[in-house]
Length: 320
Ligand code: TXA
Ligand code: MG
Image 1 (cartoon, rainbow, N blue to C red):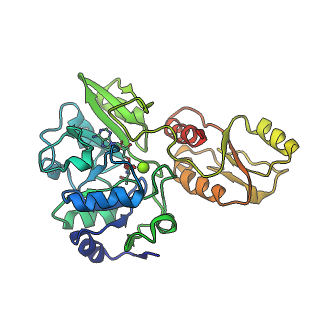
Image 2: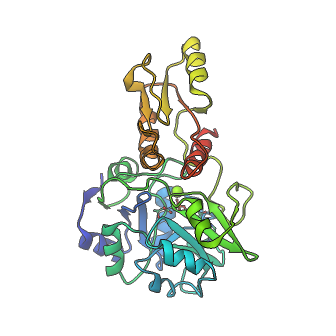
Image 3: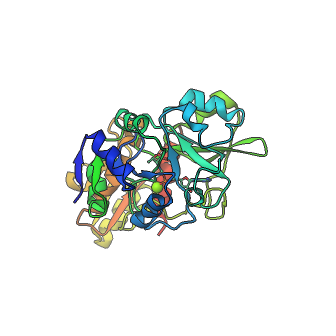
């Protein structure tokens, strides 16, 4: 198992040696390595068991450092950067030579973000290089929002996890680029699309993507628990699976089911708060996945605010 702690200088030393470290961000935990070192980047792909056609996000500590790796921040993406960095926004930007092709899977854009977690931001500001960091889960599984999640699955493969507590946002960053002058959202995430529209006006949403060459990583079956994950109307699903005698657990937005055992049900937010639901989503999916049941029954949330991004994850989890 990996060592878990808050020692920034230890994390820094390991990263400088070309090793990988689990890092906290406000969205999810990342599996970080030196983005400018092709060997470290290759180790990230191998450790996650991630196909090399799925490019990585480069993390740096401040907007002015972004220009070390990208040619420009095209207008009006610069407005989004100024407004939302540090924060859960990733921009697709024209890359400079210095970024290894392995990071971008050969694309001429690189995904960049400035995360807002204080520990990781301090680490980034002390490093001479940016960090490439995909979510710290095996490819295709649920993203980690606690240090223990990283340890559970990748602990055997990495030396150190920087413990920044529970991730505040709980959903991966929103990925935005520009295509033929149109602002395009490639992944719904922790930054609400409405906040983006308030700055740049209308945006195109293009997230359905096994057919989307721009975001090769947005494969439909992402975020999959190992158990079948069924979406529908919970009352109907519960009566159907009860009558069939199939052991199940329930993930709801806010409703509880008094006639079911408490231990087999999780509410994402008892008060119906969307931000709280986002923060709890992945930990809940992981907890349900370890219960002694055969299926997980769940429901979509209202399609508003972060509800759209949460529903995107729930739908992908339901693809078998
Ligand atoms: O919140 C986050 O973004 C987290 C934390 C750790 O920062 N990271 C994360 O990384 O979610 P990952 O690797 O799990 O997801 C990155 C996504 C993938 O779907 C990938 O296909 C897409 O970003 N991506 C990366 N570079 C791209 C590029 N140049 N063009 C299009 N999509 C890109
Ligand atoms: Mg991921």
